Length: 151
Image 1 (cartoon, one colour):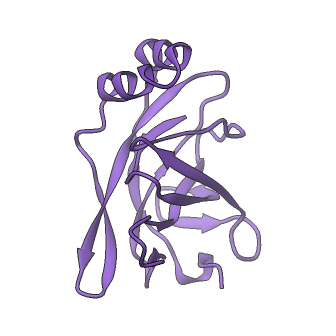
Image 2: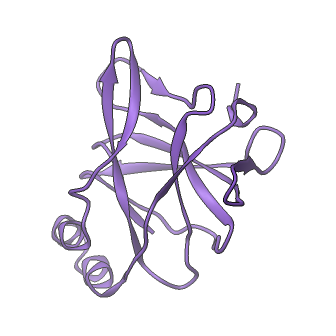
């Protein structure tokens, strides 16, 4: 799975279910997987989650020296996506917008399969080739309840 995220950021992926009406985290505080962005893209091998079972970008910490961390607020909309088994999938991207003292996530429309392949070609030509031939998935945005937030 590949998606664009701010360079050198840490991203926490929450596991849950998107039933079309809302998001439900799995586990008491939402099971999470931590991944990191390198050169503006997260490349991660994740356990498969298909259909209604998805991952959500629940938290992100940007590397700007401030230790600021975006966590979901009261039913904030967050991006969710599937991880297809055995496939390299580009699912889009997110960018961080500073809003007053806080941070907000927005879709990154520049996160294309071609851009991901170009960036990854400098690091790992085999991964770049997999991305260039891989599937294009998509992120959708759902409201995440406060009960998912880790404390």
